[in-house]
Image (cartoon, rainbow, N blue to C red; front, side):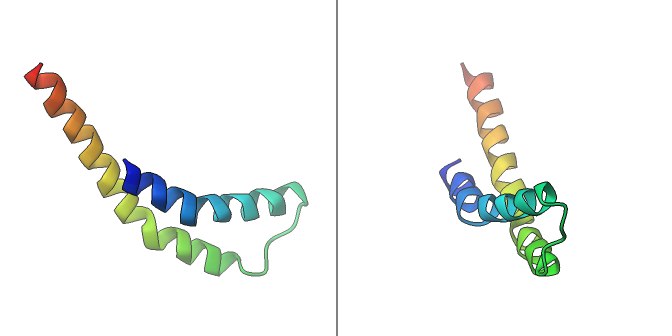
Length: 64
């Protein structure tokens, strides 16, 4: 979960903030494609880390 949180804070949060600010201003960021590319570059890692966390919870619940 710490790895997932690290990825989220270092990569996803700045992207979310940039896109949210652009949406609030009713503009499209000039680097929208680069932002999407950066988001896409970590989505698999985030999904796998989250799946590992859920699997760990399931194993923990099954053994107790």
